[in-house]
Length: 264
Figure: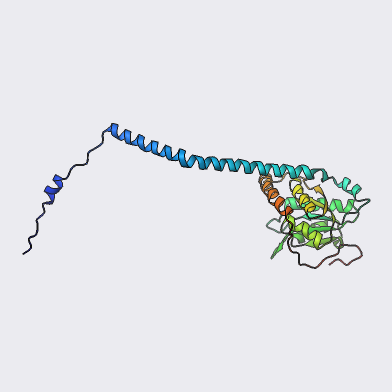
């Protein structure tokens, strides 16, 4: 028969070597070793990655700032007052006054920025004796930016026949491209807040449109710091967009803004 060995658990456990407790000096030494190991890993691997990331961030920041300042310096001389625009239009009339969208309040009324853009556009309309207004913004579902812009302009004394609506102005680039391709505008006045004018006028030039800008800064606007920061990124993006040889496809039929043609 197979004999089974009888274990004496208590005795065998008692015969196992006891785990030696470290002295305070040894604990401190091991802790110092672990700390030194972490330090070597940080210096060898993590620190170079952080340094490279910081260098890239600084260079990108310099690039963004350079592009932004360059765009501002290039376009600022073509930002004029309403009265100056009236003088410019005497010999060579403008094709339209392009008012760019700026959002609606929850109740559907124009935001402060949009209200001021329309108001300045109306001032230009009266000063230039009837150059048509082209309201460019978003109309998606119940959201109808251009309709709110038109209603405000009519309330300020502009005849409906001189107001044209482009409901597919989803971006600054698209607004200007469509003004050119759909509405036949080659010489335009752009109305928006000054921080936005530089980019809009750069895009117009890139698209082959002669453009001048009129600032719609009639008050201080909430959240302007965030808008200015986003605009720096947008200028960088549109620098590339304006430099592209290809343009977005515009499939809508042309619309005439001439006085002797019917207003759709």
